[in-house]
Image 1 (cartoon, rainbow, N blue to C red):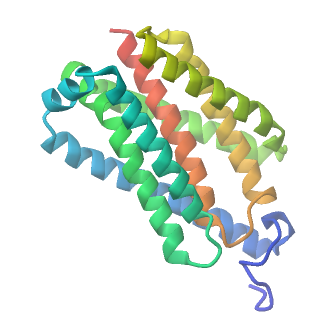
Image 2 (tube, one colour):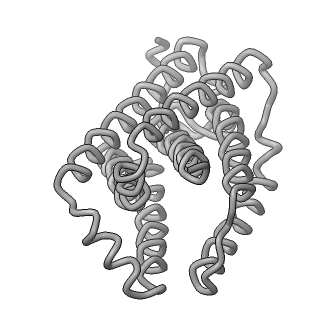
Length: 234
């Protein structure tokens, strides 16, 4: 690697030397794999020790309880992203990624507990389908060499609409249905394409932790709604 090149300097990965670009992509996917493994391990522990009736009982005791969970998740996500994008401390970046993994594990728990009780095989099926979709989307992004960052505006609008629908469903007690899950999977797919392109054009070489967090967020969203689709078929 060019010893005069500073990986934390301002500038996109695309402008860095080839060896630096390759190293950035490798580190990003290593960290993504680590986040997924940490998430799976944490969920395995939670599923083994947390009584389903306690979680379901608390959530059903008041419609605002789920809003509290959603609000806490969004707050933790904001802090996690802020830390992960820190340019001054590598440890702070890792704290951000770790916090986000914990937040995802917490918000996933009710769905996974439900799946464990009624269709344990759905978790594995959803994992396989999600993995296949992620690999396919990643291959498309890298092999076509197309810049998918033009999706950014549509993804922001879609995310805002999705949050509004989720909050409305909690407040007014209506179901979001199968097509909402399909829409969220499409949104997550777009986010994966966007982030894969943004890795080169919107991130600097020292931001592989932040890039892995963004990818993990999209993969987790896709997995959640693929699992929801499997559960809705029963």
